[in-house]
Length: 262
Image (tube, rainbow, N blue to C red; front, top):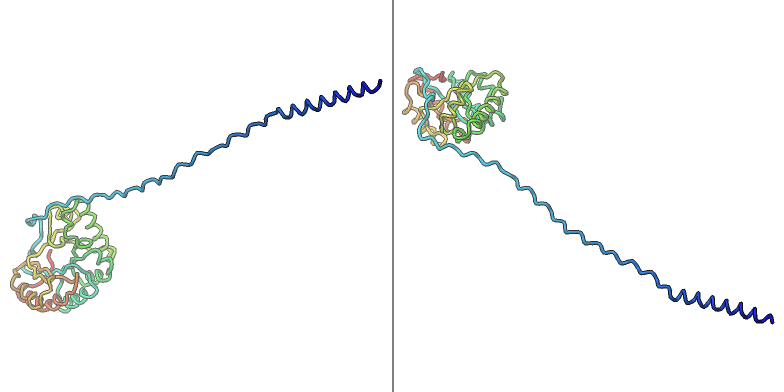
């Protein structure tokens, strides 16, 4: 009779195990998470480079057709003035100064600012030996008179500052426009800065490098009492001008006398 309860217990265990097995077979595996896709980064577009803005150059006034009023073109006395432009030059200015000193003659030197900055000792010698200074612009800008008034003023002031730096307290009574391209504006600015505008009446065109004889002959034939003679001690080879200076000084000194403009 004991076999029946044992058999019943065994049968119950068998059914329980079978049920458990069915439960495991019926359990569905959890769904795998859907793969995440990362959106591609947008292509990097470089920002456009800033376009440099260039300030438009101011339009120049028309070229002058006549000389404006207010130019000094005579010494005011019988004596003739010798003027030398475009220096100081380390080769030619000392030689011109030597000839002037040997002949006891005073002249006017129209100096360029960039040359003054390079050779301040020559400006000091010009003043020390009793010659006169004249502002001839910062870098010989022939169109300076056609530029805005503010530009003209800045140019002339800069040149005067270079001169006074070379020779503190130096007087600059005159301004001369490069190329003789005068305008009323540049004359007015020079006047406001305490300078008179110095032109010329005799131009032997020594800048074109004719012979020394041609230079002296042109000056001799064109000179009159009170004339202002234009020559150059800078801006290139001035050997022909230098060769003409003794003859020019001898002739003008004998006929009229030589003195700077006042």
